[in-house]
Amino acid sequence: MKNNIVGGVTILMGLLIVLGPQFLFKACGLMEGNIPRCHWSVQADTGIGMIIILLGVCFIVFNNQLIQFGLTIGIFFASIFALSVPNILIGGCGMMSMACRRTAFPALSVISILVLVGAAANIVYLGGKTKTAM
Image (cartoon, rainbow, N blue to C red):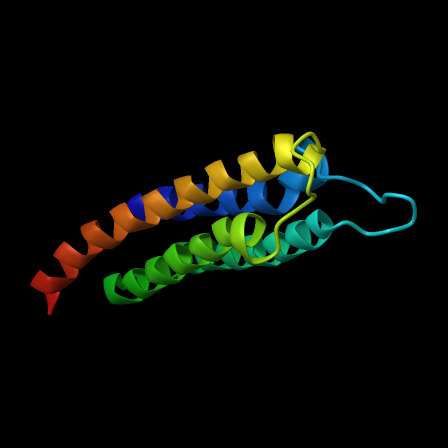
């Protein structure tokens, strides 16, 4: 049962990372024919969100605790990338009043931090269980 809950929450958070900037908290659109940097940040986070979704599906499918431990480590690192893309690696528009800076990036950051904390907690939980299983 716990596998389904952890995997389901991971899938839900991955869906928010993928679909959120498209429908819920939109980033900036085309500006005078130019594609802004925030567009590429959203594209990169969409790919990372898809990876998080797939890792969540694998977490549900595989019942071995060591495999789930490894999948959780993958989710943890993917969430670090999802957090760093809009804030460090690619970034967004220069003006703080733009939609990407006001809504999209803060929302993506909060979701990524939630995934990061959840994965870290699950790593600690599964790490304690797998030591006894070895």
